[in-house]
Image 1: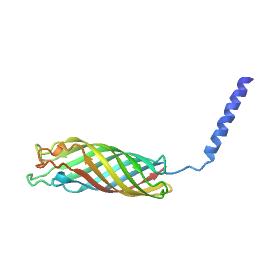
Image 2: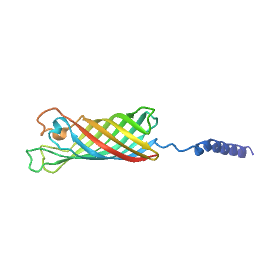
Image 3: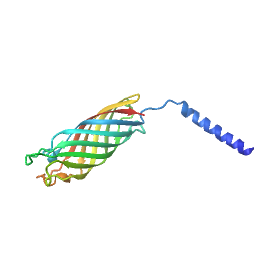
Image 4: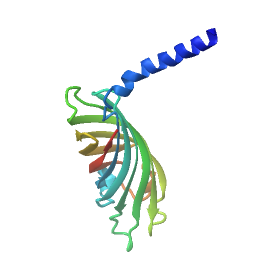
Length: 195
């Protein structure tokens, strides 16, 4: 008898605790998934060796509070090498991932400006001629991003600019005559869904 009473009490407690959660409206915007598309180019000494090209990506954004967000994502880009020493210049195809911490004003949610910093890792694949001058390489990056997000209901869209400080750019060691290094600058549009 006591066992049935305890089971019934446990069931009643679960129903009572779950009822407010089930009745509450679902809050949208805690999780955003979006596609990115835009253009990018290398800067500094690396910028003298490459031309502007397309970039693409897929990002998962977690927004636990109105002023703090976390992103993880995949990004790719392709830039043609602008090297007059080569008859058929190669392409630099970059694929990588990054994690970003974002901050934004807590009182703006429908139109949300943000700034972010993070860590990234990309593999640059040198495709085409240019062996010896350019080599495929793994690069460490520090992405710095600013942008503006537009959120309504289940949709999110935005515009952003990202500068990636390249910790390692050994793919152009032999081709580069200076030691100025460089980074990677891009501008992109985003479009996705909010959950």
